[in-house]
Amino acid sequence: MCNKPAVVHDTHIIDGTKREIHLCAEHAAEHGFADIKHVSMASFTTKVGSAAVQSPSCPTCGTTVPQIRQSSLLGCPDCYDAFDKPIGRLIGQSQYGATHHVGRRPAGNDEDVSRRHETQRLMHELEAAVAAEQYERAAAIRDELAKRSRGEG
Image 1 (cartoon, rainbow, N blue to C red):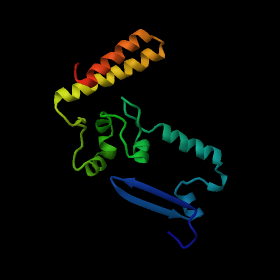
Image 2 (spheres, helix red, strand yellow):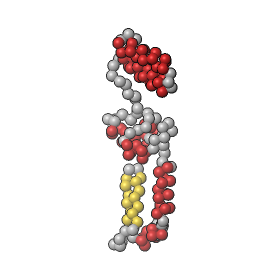
Image 3 (cartoon, one colour):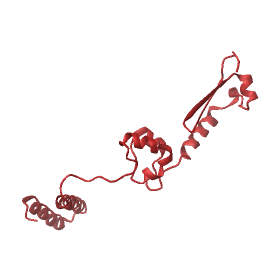
Image 4 (spheres, rainbow, N blue to C red):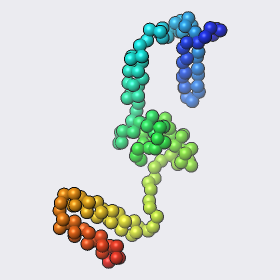
């Protein structure tokens, strides 16, 4: 608005359009901006921190948009629906046009998949039995796993 050095830099992004305003101290006061020399950093960081806490989160896993932007990972399948507006276009671009989670499936036929799942379940049971010092149960599970690895079960 004038040739004086800007002390207030305000950026708004509305519907994907970025609008920046750079104002000197006088024009900033005219537009309702507080005198930045009198703003304490403690109140500033509190306001910034509270804004981060208030960001919307996925109702299922609690993931927030800033977390997704930082890690480039969604927390669960429901994040696709929960964040459709803020990052739907971004998801579509990164997932070759797919905007909904359709799940993952390991290679192989259904029998192979169910066999792998059962083996994983038994491994977890074995670990739990050993941790609980249930050695007879652990031995039975170990034997079942051995049969499966030989192709008997």
